Length: 106
Image (cartoon, rainbow, N blue to C red; front, side):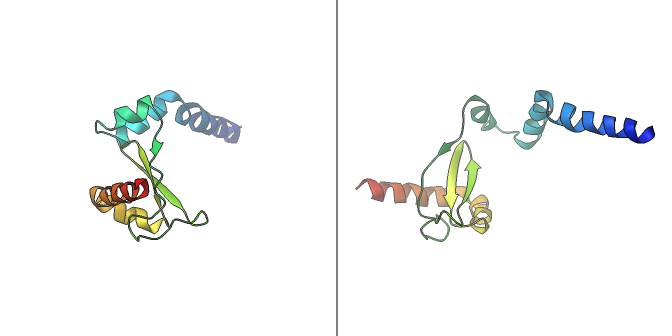
């Protein structure tokens, strides 16, 4: 009997509390304490569409492609390891992506 009560309580917690909108808002509030979260609430992130990894300069292959969302934009990388470098200095790599996009337009 105790096992049934414990499992019921656990199920309620996992599916009732964690899956609820209130729990999601609390989670988001804890993770995103800056103003950029407001954009996340209002719309979906936009894929910038870069085809060259800003970290390595290599073409991004679908087999190893990794993505990372930063300030409402999704950036593409050749592998998950490059995301760590991007996080250390996003402005540096965003500038590289912008330069790549400008070359594509020419």
